[in-house]
Length: 474
Image 1 (cartoon, rainbow, N blue to C red):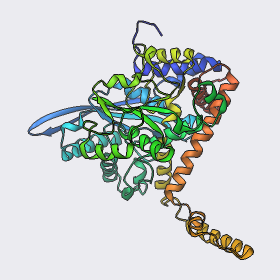
Image 2 (image 1 turned 120 degrees about the vertical axis):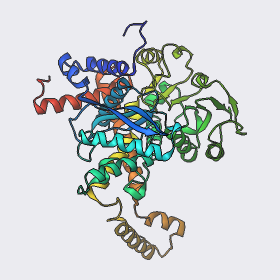
Image 3 (image 1 turned 180 degrees about the vertical axis):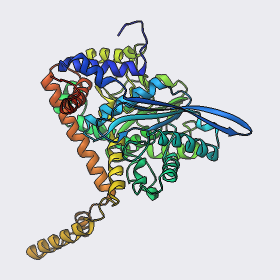
Image 4 (image 1 turned 60 degrees about the vertical axis):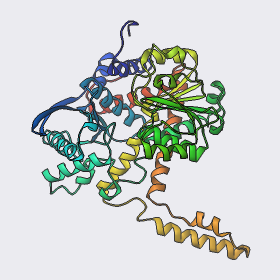
């Protein structure tokens, strides 16, 4: 990549893929085939608002249909474009392959500032956008399944599901046409926090490996490291809460679009959440100093830096000012290819986005399976497990002549509910995937965590194309 050229998001993703392909010695024609977007639909959403016709451009990119359905969120933002949408679709392909989720990669976007429109207006706009995707075969439980992303949430997913159900009232699997829904509409417990919790699990797993934390001089006890988070949206917010409540982490700074909070002794996240939920901003929060220089949060000296906002925030312009031991990519593409090369040479590890923020698609997969099977996780086995554990405790008490304290008894007897199974499944995916990344690093020699992760994805995609006879892969 030329030094004087500022790469696009898609060019950055392609550069990471090419680097991994060279480490694997894959043929150029195979990589060109894997990299190429399968299909892109561009639609115009025209609607009359306040006696004036407004037009919104939308896209749905399908990067890969090697496994169906293709999966990926829908983003509502005034800054979206086709290039970004294709890049995010490609990331989803590699992400699903890395964590072994049986989906292809897709992404959707609508060029709109959702804050400028009422709920009813947004509902009408979403319905039209969804109908256009559905009628062109870019949205269905079997072919292409969206989820929330920047600017969208549970509400928009219900509207999209409703649009699908109206067009296909006889499809008993209509609930599975989107994920990230409210529980009452077929959603799954833990989905809203899944991406943030997955990020936390990735950090926990990194710190279980002595050769990594010793090299980067991190403390294996997560609470003993200083942490900076850039972004307090869906991911950053749930991540901060998980780190604070489960790990007692010392988060010294959190950035938002208009500035950042700083407290070298650590920010009380419980107090911040109460303040933020009430005021929707960081200003006047008494537990930390608010500094109106949002970009500076990335250059604060810390042990672990977590960009959890937008892409390309760590780039050639600021990479030499980064003062951290580990970067954890909670956002999609926050580190550019050029910056990544410099960080690797400096010995700063980067936990890559295609692994780190895969928690959302992992739990989306659980939700999709729940919708397709029409049964809630834990419903069949919970009471069976409780009864068996009750019997076991009774046997132990009878044999020892001693009673087990009630607080321990309740913990042991507790049968797995949906949230328990979701969190267990997510932890298992994050831990096993990281072990596979480390194994790849060892086999390929002198490659970064990112290249090792991409290599996993490319090897799986290569095998698929070889088995299907698409290419003479070697």
